[in-house]
Length: 305
Ligand code: PHE
Ligand code: FE
Image 1 (cartoon, helix red, strand yellow):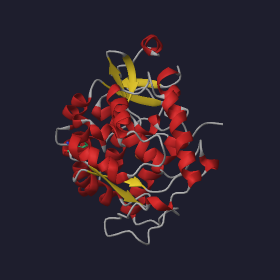
Image 2 (tube, protein in one colour):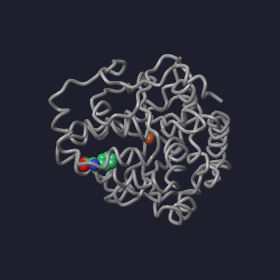
Image 3 (cartoon, rainbow, N blue to C red):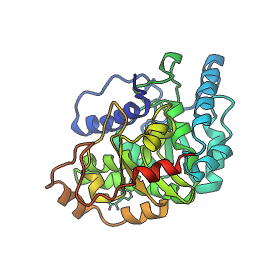
Image 4 (cartoon, rainbow, N blue to C red):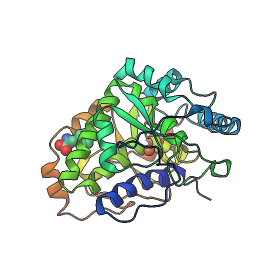
């Protein structure tokens, strides 16, 4: 069976965005939203985590720690070490103090998925929403909604990196703008293929910075070592036109050279880009596009640890 964890988690995030926008019925969500404030923020009640939950966190953490060296980009690994979160479900206030010093970001606890506009507002103000509950042991390899392990282990380490931190703020502002322009479908693809499933070439070889990959027991190796997927040099318009897989590993990954490049390539006004891509057909997840610059299989294998 496939490990569907990151893909499903990410998809639900996007699906939530779509349902809010379309006023469709909301999916059934696990979290307790009754204590949430107007921004969907709750208090992280650390005392309510059980010893079993802390133990499950440690097991998830240990499995991922064995997987990520040689695959995760250095900035991610440095952030992970600084967070020092291997002992149990981490306290968000302690992480926020480290983030405040490094990049002026902070974490806010949320009961789970939140409306897209609320999500973008948080990012635009350098607040990262982290789900406050942990999956069950039966969901070790597979979970439908993002939980605290995906959100914290996958997303938080890179928020300690100043350049990545600026990209996330810009993305939040870009989300508020895309909503106005009725273009969330395209902007969601950018989040998917960078923040969740992005790859990066580094002097040491191919690495990942994507939270959906980094929090997955299976996609770390699939995304970087498997001969199956297409690994395409980042191209904004190509990416915005590319559909994604919601319930299995990705067929296509986009490869950046640095976070500085990502910021530069996404800095221009997207208004004309949205207009253009909305008139063009989308690419299927496994479809080749004219002009694709591919990472050769040899390059990929040569860079495996
Ligand atoms: N430049 C984008 C726009 O004009 C905003 C954006 C920046 C979106 C970075 C995503 C990431 O809409
Ligand atoms: Fe995520």
